[in-house]
Image (cartoon, rainbow, N blue to C red; front, side, top):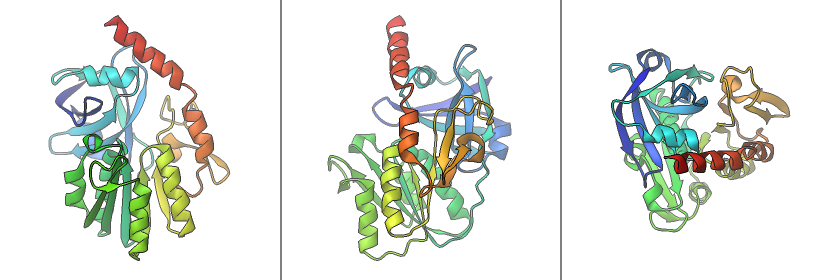
Length: 276
């Protein structure tokens, strides 16, 4: 059992941050790695990326968006409640190196994952530029944290309610137009966003890393549920990733596979809400 010691709503109730006691995981986890949790005895196994860790206090922080039954159950927990199972760290231990100027691009809950990854790049001396985006200002998260971490931060909103009016790719275009030298791009967010970023960076021949979170069951490579095609080869995001060369990922296939259970997930969520 892992006790929740802090809980915060970062947006209009659908973006939640929880901090839980997990000293063994906090000691070993690295930026970009993830955990698999079960809310209760009958709950499904759900992979979520860790946003922060605190080795001194033995805690990890998870930021997630309420999309289905499990995340809704997780969001309903309060400080003092406990999560039944928490397994990790999972995924490859990313080896951060000094490459120069790294542009981190995040959207939605992916901003939390991006922030942790960018910390890894900062620790080895890279220059950081951040781009974060959301549909509207109220849905932005971790702006202050990203601004403190990055030498420069560009913020976009689809509706123009804050920052640049447009998409994260528009902000990336601005950097290119300003002739900013970019050695590496890291993109984390909705698949459609990451695909658009990769299409642009491929034109400019900028190496691009993406963090994938496909459908996953066991998190150990046994079930094959998280398989993705990368460079024409089948990879498992749980053990081969979650970070991949974005220019080699078959995003069309991945987006199609991720929609396989969307209707069932919505039905399950609605059923659980009606049962309350």
